[in-house]
Image (cartoon, rainbow, N blue to C red; front, side, top):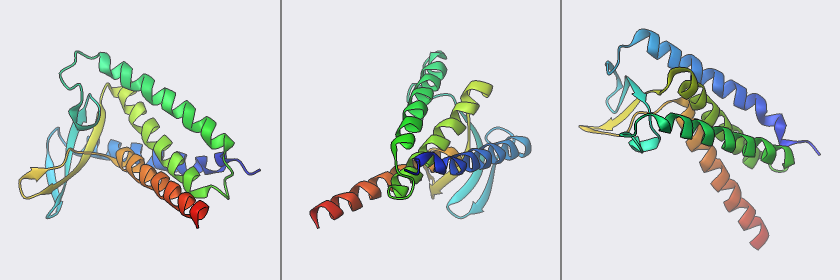
Length: 160
């Protein structure tokens, strides 16, 4: 069987893109500095010490290690799952898991090395702003969508 680990180069590439993009933004922007890229999209340097949508934003710092531990546990689980997958037959699931792994590790690198995650993609509609995010967050979202698509197509194959 061709193990799902064959998809780990995708994970490495996404982590590299995530870290390079964050480093570039951190080097060229001051905190909260914003540049419009499109009418609905800005590049804005933000630091996120909590989880998605400011969960535990008011905590005293222990959340850094909680989220780091969670990321490590999830990453180990994903690597084991990938090992058990057939890289060709279950390619959509393996790709989705590889992207989620990349996102978890990309944000983990920031959390451990900086104490916060660098976010910089600021999507908005007029004065309503979605919480800022980064390449790692995007990889997690796309990976989750691919996993749902894989589950949907597998269900259709079983019932059809």
